[in-house]
Length: 150
Image: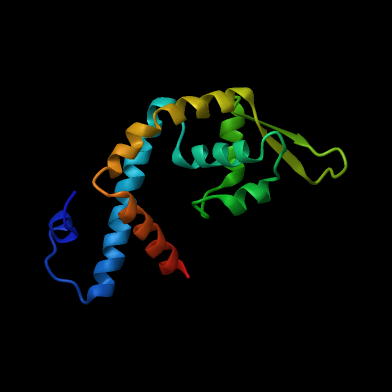
């Protein structure tokens, strides 16, 4: 990947802010496509992967659907549908809470934990996508992206 002007065949932008927005959106899409390709052999989507990682983070404790939704990267994801797809694959289980029938508790299963372990082993390949950035550049970029959202 090169300069944004070369990637989208556009030499002029209204201003540096428009260029920044286009560059961030283009790069986010590029990362998303790479992530989809990385997870495809495991039979899950990036959104399903995000749910599994959230549940692994709370393991062995359960989470409610609202807790999962709050923590998701993609706030537009349908957590109910994602959890159901993962349940059908035996990666998560859900049960009506004993003390509140309106609450559903969701846990990651051993199969879900095993899948994440396999995906974790492929993480070094995923990180190679960013090998052209130094550690200090990565820290600076993280800092700038955090600052952008302030």
